[in-house]
Amino acid sequence: MKTYTKFLGKIFINSFLYVSAIMFSLIFILNLLSEIEFFREMEANSFFPIYLSLLNSPTLIFEMFPFIFLISTQLLFITLFNNNELSIFKYSGLKNSKIIGILSLMSFVLGFLIITLFYNFSSNLKNFYLDIKTNYTLDKKYLAVITKNGLWIKDVFNEKTLLINASKIEQNFLKDAYISEFDENFEILRNIVSPKIDVKEKKWIIYDAEILIQNTKENYKTYEIQTNFNYHIIQNLFSNLSSLSFLELLELRGNYKQLNYSLVEVDLQLIKLVSFPLYLTLMTIFSSIIMLNTKEFKSSILKISIGLFFSVLIYYFNNFFNVMGKTEKINLIVSVVMPLIFLGLINILMIKKINAK
Image 1 (cartoon, helix red, strand yellow):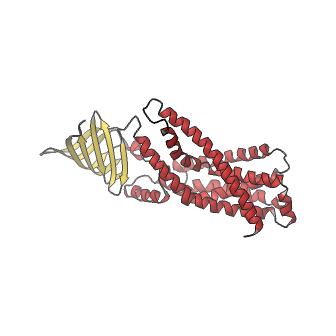
Image 2 (tube, helix red, strand yellow):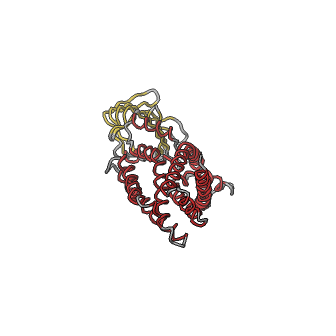
Image 3 (cartoon, one colour):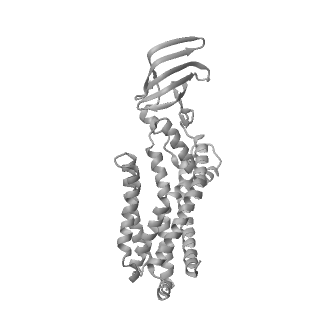
């Protein structure tokens, strides 16, 4: 590895760690305030909000990595400007485009490590965080999971508990459903078996219902029960994907597909993760170009402010396309790739004359 590559790498990593530490501190403080407010009227150890904030903050900082890479790159160039090292590189024959190329490769490798190591680590912490936090939520009536054995739902209505299992969901219908109903003491009241249940509304219509009460069996062409769930609520039960690792997301996708669940949110998360190293690389290139085009500005704060302004625009542009993909108004892959193509084209147009800077 050449000396200038090691030199740039050292400054970039130091800047990255510095900015990450500041971002983590800010996120931790904000999250801590939220946790303190949550536990304000509960009996809990005073250190508990701190503990939960430490568990939750890594997932939150993951969303901030594009900004972290942008600011880290800006700090690197500010260091080069202040020490006149960019001019030394130029006189040594090292072009600006070569510097950007080195930083781009570093960003891509670092982005890959973030996805493979940090993301899986943070998702495990998030999962642990949610497990603990669930024990303190005010509403424990509902529980829903998806396994290879189908969809499982726990519901409490009128002091009765329903445990519902279905092999899959098609349109508004639960297929091959089995419902167990318990009283407030969790004593079994009855079991209901049905090949098809219409869950479009919260009042479910059970077709060809077979109701088992102790040793008796009753059959109904249609039977109705009131629940807290409808089709829309069921489809949106499993939205906290940040608590799942990449492999767990793939497994969940398989379960969703088997149950005919909407794959939109899972696919969007997977595509975003796969493209994340490229996104971070493009942000590094964009930040480098901005800094090289504003190096005549004396104020470092102004340079950083310009970069942050454009990064916020890119964030909302990216978020707009993600929403379009999530609502299925455009293709999911297009919703993720289009902002990257747009950012890439901007970089290509701006990088042409960068060696003359």
